[in-house]
Length: 507
Image 1 (cartoon, rainbow, N blue to C red):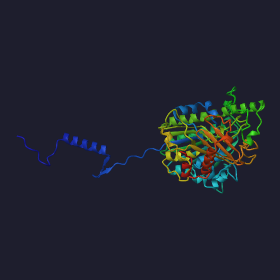
Image 2 (cartoon, rainbow, N blue to C red):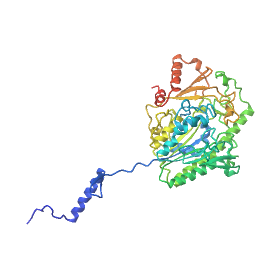
Image 3 (cartoon, rainbow, N blue to C red):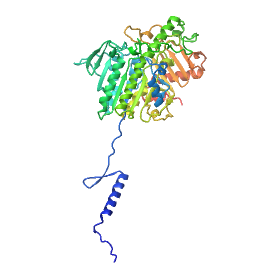
Image 4 (tube, one colour):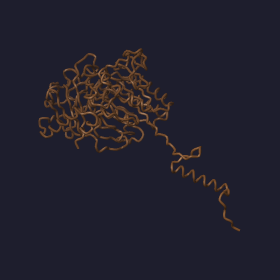
């Protein structure tokens, strides 16, 4: 006879097991953890792992060298290229001060390579080291390292009143040179200890930086902390010294001959350039030799990138690391009748390579959005989950790394340049003499270049019709457009922080 089960009667083991499985499944679906003390509590999900960042920053590397760099080409196939990356000033120290802080030169106060208008001393005195991204990255839990070049005027032996050579705040590891341009016979401040490197083949600076970078990655891989590594080569800056193994390579390479090379008619150019004579055969031969050595120099840079990629793969960090490749400024070599140098407002100097690979970065993508070196600091900070200071003039590039195209992005980029006085100590003195541009401000829109010189002269190029900037149409500009561009110039050269974001948008 059937009798109903009374409350409190023991259930069969199978029923208990089924009930327990159901309970645990529900807890898992609802995100509820079972407390060992009998009380239910919400489970705490582990925080997402922060990505590693490796930033390879070269010196004077122009777009015409990229076709000769196999690994950079491979990065372009596997990542995203910024096709209109514009530096706020095509000069080493000013560009690097902007990179570190995300601020335009008029806000960093670093306008040239040396005091009183620039250099490392001005950067430090104006709080640039505290405002740079490194202390913030370290506070966000990152292990940080800088290898190679810092800022013009930095001396590796300088103790700044301390007992050992000075290391700026925010850097866990520091291996930085002062005059590393010849690639040999230099000193490195290695974590507060001065180490000399001579003229042996193994002392070639780009290779030394590659060795130190791989060593850092291997050691950092054993640590639970994410890492930020900045490798700043002096290559391919003059005096154009290739590694011995590349010194005879590419014997037939010559400088590219775009329509601007040794420009036939420069009568429409401003006076500083209009006075330049056409290049003759000996000068062109020197330009070809210089370009050939620049191609040779970047082979070691390309190999450095390959070694970093291999180290990331070997340590299992190739999928959680953003690898960023770029240059502090471009370089002209024969264009507009100019020999080797930079500092102009033309694309040869201000538009530089920038390529990023990493988790979630679209492969084979090129964006032509107007991006700038002001944008690097906020990018690194956002990737690290660190706050971006309100004083930052640039914007994070992270949306582009996710395949997005922000609708409110800038469509005007600012370039501002103060002509430095000629100095025998200036590594860029080849372009700071009488043949260099006077002080100017410039705007680069999607298809225009507009320049206002301190002496009152103007340049205007319709780059959609005239991509090599051969036909200066400043005198033929519609008055309304001239007024609009001049107004934009006024706003951008006085902007700061979020005001720079709005000043760089005209639609």
